[in-house]
Each structure stands twice: as structure tokens, then as C-alpha cells.
Image 1 (cartoon, one colour):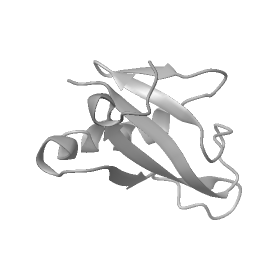
Image 2 (cartoon, one colour):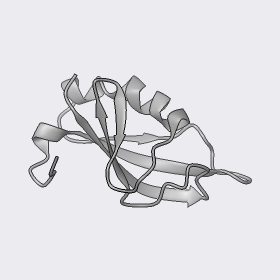
Image 3 (cartoon, helix red, strand yellow):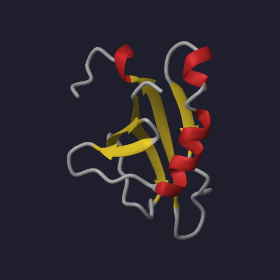
Length: 92
């Protein structure tokens, strides 16, 4: 599997993993590598990993929502997934 850049695009409500817009982490060989001080959410990662294959058949980034509906105490997070080699601005 190629390295996949995961960026938080938006958060509705309050994310229990404390993710914020513009947080970034990397999926490498099915491992999550937070970049800088950012955290990653194990629950959201299930949705992210399940959709990584779409990057091989669909050009451009893929947008995925975490399974939390963002009602009540939790928060819904919108992620952008892109292949690291497709992102010229990514510094690894």
C-alpha cells in the first residue's frame, strides 16, 4: 500500500479524539503515523482504511466522514485522503 495523507477538512461538533481542521496524519502499511503533535482516531481509521482502495481507481482525493454523526457530545469529522506521491506539497 502506498502512503496515504489524511487531512481533517472540517469538524462538526466536538471530536472526542480532539481532531481539528487542518490536522494531518499518515497511513503507511496500515499503520497510523500522526504528524507533529496531531492525534489520530482509531474509530475513524476503520472508515479511512476501508476506503483507501478507492484512491487506486478514482483520480484525485477521496473524502470520507467518520462514523460519529456529530449529534450530542461527539463530533463528525470530514477527512480528505490522497496518495502521498500525488501530493507535491507533502513533506515526509
